[in-house]
Amino acid sequence: MKAIRVFGLTKSYKSKTNVIAVDNLTFEVEEGQVFCFLGPNGAGKTTTIRILNTLLKKDRGQIYFFNIDLDKKPQEIKNIIGVVQQHTNVDSELTVWENLLIHSMLHKMKKSIFEERAIQLLEAMDMIDKKDRFANKLSGGERRKLSIIRALLHNPKIIFLDEPTVGLDTFTRRAIWEGIKQLKFSGKTIILTTHYIEEAQMLSDLVLIINKGKKLIEETPNALINRLGRITLEYQENGKTTYKFFNTSQEAKDFSANLINLDSILIRETNLEDVFVTLTGNGGENYCNSLEKCFP
Ligand SMILES: Nc1ncnc2c1ncn2[C@@H]1O[C@H](COP(=O)(O)OP(=O)(O)OP(=O)(O)O)[C@@H](O)[C@H]1O
Image 1 (cartoon, rainbow, N blue to C red):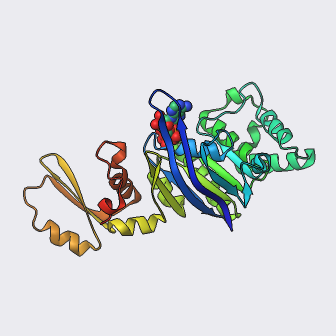
Image 2 (cartoon, rainbow, N blue to C red):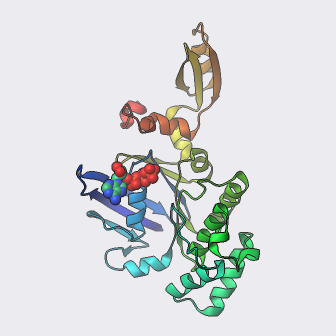
């Protein structure tokens, strides 16, 4: 079953330059998948996510969550999604427990169900001993955990995580990765945006690469790597690094045999970051932005 279907989504900001932030975007997300948006700064990821989260109005396009039309039943959709925004937005003046209680009231949860679920999630996220602490006395990682617990409290079917691990230490980041894997295991659909491409490669079933508001490609990480070539030859010549992609190590070795006077040379496995940089040029002016050019 499709958890999300988006057709022709378009959004402009009416500023001096009239930016088209999202340009005729169409994609589908299968239930139970981890679906990741990748794109350089300003690509249109947050705009797309905010529209899907009912926080921003679109100009054009249709959006369905489990066949429910977002235009017709936004409240019904709010009840089946959980949202962790890019900037943690917990209420600093309230305790952890009070933050959760207010969320449960907004979602009209029964008190007994709220208490049971809140304790379960606080324990799972190793936050139970912080339950009576004011949110402004939590560390950045603890506040992020609180916003994740809050997003999960009403047991949503679809969870949006906008850069969930930015600024977190290695241990907290790994704990959140484990949490995402467990959510997927329990059948939840997860929409992830991240600038950590190794995170996208490790967690995602499907990746949608977006640049300048337009979809470039939507495939599994593995298929994207196969398109480019599974082996990367990376060499430095006069301080300039060149990357070449091959299907086998032997092809890479044969090619490198003809290279002379190199500063350094490395043959390694291709990763999703190589695909991303090839497709988007890391947001620079000479980005490829064309599948035919990038993957002839
Ligand atoms: N409120 C706004 N008013 C005018 N332009 C905006 C507004 N919000 C975003 N934009 C522009 O829309 C485009 C897409 O921005 P968006 O925040 O969706 O990108 P993003 O992919 O999430 O970027 P990042 O990775 O930097 O968070 C950018 O050109 C941005 O400058």
